[in-house]
Length: 66
Image 1 (cartoon, rainbow, N blue to C red):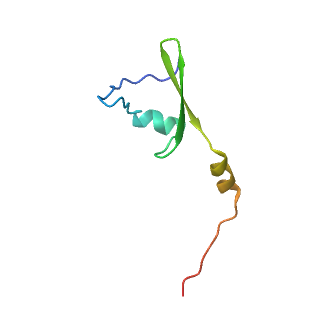
Image 2 (image 1 turned 30 degrees about the horizontal axis):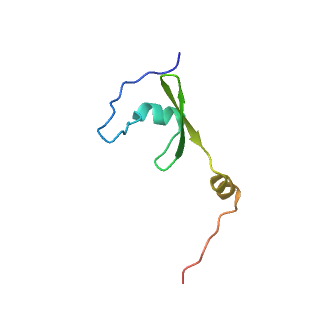
């Protein structure tokens, strides 16, 4: 079985994904996450949106400031 950490559900329904797990998965603030329900479990998966893929494959744009 994988890594297990304990966290707590807030009154607003928010859950903090522990830092160690975010680092292990290379998840960063602003990442999109799919939420899936399977029985009594919730599965989170990081999504890479098409716009992000295109952005990573574009050459860097540089502007010169005079």
